[in-house]
Image (tube, rainbow, N blue to C red):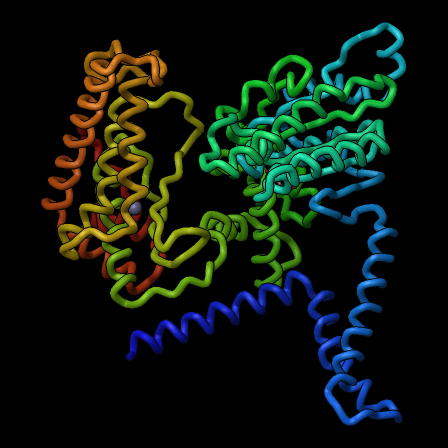
Length: 542
Ligand code: ADP
Ligand code: ZN
């Protein structure tokens, strides 16, 4: 019975949440529905003439519905700048310039030609120069791909259209293709212009990768239409529509998309090195009052390895918020330090765990942290948390102390052991393994496989530099699997041994986590080495 009640409560909660979400997402539509539902009958009862049946209020409701529908239609016709329709956004008079995009000098040089082309297409047409009218920006989210595309439009003073690849993904065959055609048609009317397609992988993944009949047919039609439109772009050379697409997964794209004449240019816009991070911080700091002689820009840039451009922008903003909260008028270095934690962890995701779940998560994260800390080749663990954020219930964070481009074999092995630490701690301290540990297992195996097939770190090393694809012989595949299995098994045993002989540390960290929610480097050092300031011991593992 209690189960049924609980189910019911969950269901009501869920319905409630979807309702709230709906009202937040479509406030106007919600108000309209409310007005019609309440206003219709009310109007009827207020009118002097009355018939004695229910048809009156219903008719009145329908009448009001018709009026609102007409109003909506008229409004839609007059959609102006900055408005969206079917996912397509249009922006006129873009104010973004190359100066707003910090770092990325190489990328800027590469897109310069597109700007020239857009500014004076006739000049290029006159000499029959074929200018590539499509570019693919490649890089992890938040590194400024959208910003760069906008800056191109801003510099060339042309309209900026943007849409996400997922806006073309439809269930019914033919709908996605029609939308592609409509979008390009709209863009052509405004040419010269930029058409930015974010997350192009959503619509441009390889044919045959969708699975399922209907889905595959729809995907293929949409992709074909996209290919046709991209090819047709050069039909009027004096009125170019330059397509800038963005992705962080170029490997899944259909090869036809990047063939000559389509998205020919490939431009990397990835995580920035220290110099680039410094430039990005500078751009965003210009917008807030900084205590100039207190804030060490170089140090900040140095200690934010792995931050995306968006993370850095967020960091500056959070620092300003912290300062304002403390009643300061200038933002100091201490505010940036505090803001860092907030940027790393993100905001509360609203998930609530039971005490039991929380304890499991605390053991799990302590397991990762202890195994990580005991291996001196790894970067120090700076934070451990059991406060649910983003898409996780708990998290262990190591922050590299500097930019690194080369990874050693011992580091990768240590990383595999660390990934197993969470799952093992659950097994050793709680007594069973729970569903949360799946991702860890997958990532550990992926690292091991990479070592064997790509990095030449397996035994024998000859399996490296091969594409682990269908063309491998069955025997090779089996040998590779065996080697991956050996690495994984060894690291699993090693992680278990580390945890078994450091039970006190795991227990101490778990207890502190349950009390504090989040602990950072000082507390971690204290538990691991009895000293808050201590460096890692210089014990080499493996
Ligand atoms: P992407 O499209 O690659 O996911 P965005 O262009 O949307 O990333 O970047 C998000 C935000 O992060 C930008 O609006 C900007 O505030 C900040 N940002 C990212 N990269 C840079 C950069 N190179 N220079 C300045 N700001 C940046
Ligand atoms: Zn884990």
